[in-house]
Amino acid sequence: MAEFDGKWALVTGASAGIGRALACELARRGARLILTARRRDRLEALAAELRASGTEVRVLAADLFDSEAPARIFAFAEAEGLAVEILINNAGLGQSGRFVESPEEQELAQVRVNCEASVRLARLFVPPMVARGRGWVLFLASTASFEPLPYFATYAATKAFDRFFALGLAEEVARCGVKVTALCPGPTDSEFFAVARADAFKMRSMQSAELVARKALDGLARGRRTVLPSLDGRLLAFAVRFLPVGWITRAVEYCARPKKSAGKEIS
Image (cartoon, rainbow, N blue to C red; front, side):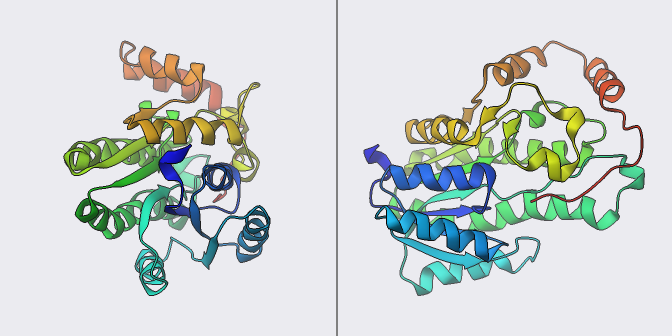
């Protein structure tokens, strides 16, 4: 609990789902917060809730599809004199459906937000952490990062990028006192599946975003490189080491094959 007490944390995608839960859990652990997402109304509502419980909060609406947004977020923190010691790279989007029928801009948006924005933010905020000799960085990956997913192909690929980038960066900065964790949740109770129209990937039993957030921050504080919050996720990550990729993709394609075209951006 004391690990994050009094430190400034930046949470992207904080307006809903796991991002919101991470912000609330950080506040419970005594962190001060910079919240960013596209939807200012939701950010302001969350900020008011957290301030009422005594948490110091700043809000900045930003769309990470804009390649200049990471620099604006960094400039905002610098102008406010806030030394960000905890970076939560949570913002992301996904799209389900047939790749050949989905809008090209939505496929590219997943790469821009899930990969490029995370790298840009890390490049801005991690060097000061290294200079201070202390810091924590969490990347939201997914159990989807462990295998290719037909009809969720770009999303799964971007999450594999996030996981591998986090693991590589973690090794680089470990000796500098900076801890980096890849969070790989399985299906989580949030608006993700409804907005993405990804019911084929939805499970009957899903973890709450609050439980995922608690396990994520426990792992980050302990310096764990990968956090798999669910037992199903841990079993999946183990099993795919031994199963041929072709078996996995054929099984997923058969189970997830859409009956009609479907695809929508989520964030």
